[in-house]
Image (cartoon, rainbow, N blue to C red; front, side, top):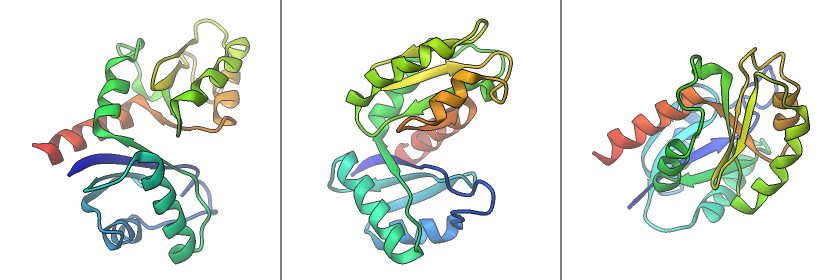
Length: 177
């Protein structure tokens, strides 16, 4: 069985698109996934699946949420191996405040090239890098003040701060141990 990470975009922000994590876990278990664990209340799920590729798993999860919970939500799925590569290739991993470092996950690595459109919005001391598996934005002055973060959030991606990414990696390591 392979370990995967599912990232739901835009849930539990404000009053719209509310999903209880217990319902999300049950839904994934009903799909036949095992070792289902959620992290925080913002749509981060680690699970194991016997078959499938990330795009198909994401489509299945998104369709099940729409059917059973009545909410349309984009889902991005990455394998544990992909997450490890994303963690490893982060050029800003030593940033002082991990909550100011965003990682943008995309459904398809081919979509990363479009992320370069963010670069004109990056203002020093911000830093931006498009990697092979994700894009990274260090908002040294804060995410709310960053025009680049605002532009990044509008892209076909979902973002997590570095602290959350590291917590997901720790969950994967625990499940795979």
